Image (cartoon, rainbow over all chains, first blue to last red; front, side, top):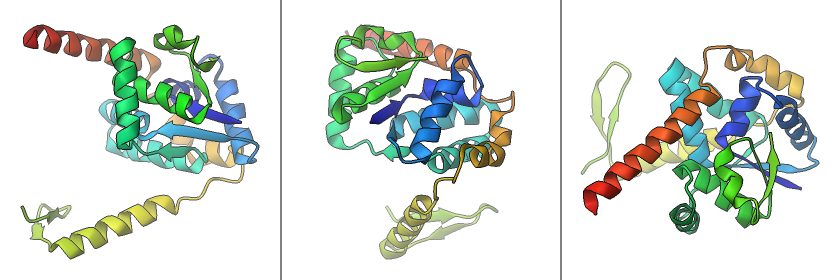
Amino acid sequence: MRYVFDTYALMVYLRREKNFQIVRSIIVDALEERHTIHLSVINMGELCYMQSRKSGGARAESSLRFVRRAGINIEPATTGRVIRAARLKAKVSLSYADAFAASLAEELNATLVTGDPEFKPLEPMLRILWL
Amino acid sequence: MRPQLTTKDGAVISLTDEIYEAILLLIEKQDHEVEPVASIEELETEFAGLFAANGATLEDLHAEHIQERGREERKLEHFS
């Protein structure tokens, strides 16, 4: 099974917010190679600049290393992915980074893990695991 | 424009394209050599500092998305 995390899912885990155990258990299963986790590099960038703005560049670097050590696959923003995310963003009110998370989940036929209500309008077209 | 390398102490070194490409490849290779941890406990121990209270919050993320929408609306108004 494939999962796509958005920035929200990672923050839920890092901040020990409500339902962080769901994210944790998905990471556990991925580390044991029962399924895979994917993260758009655009969401990775969003996490980095949010961390950097709040607590400095070292924390952003640490976040990047954390994602790699957690066995999460960072997916590049290819031209095709940028165009698909742009088409989605034109239709639905989403942040730019979230448009990449949603279109990546659609492309990989994966379950999107998030608690961000921005994704509500996409429920008919995406499998979403709500946190 | 010739690629330049700025060192930590601020010195600027001009690079040939070949050296610039070689440095980029080296960085990319190092980046991909990070291996996943063996267990969640190892992950949480190694990154204990990241779980501390001073990082970005969901409220920060929410505020960022609201600001982004505001910027987009201003741009659309400006160019329409």
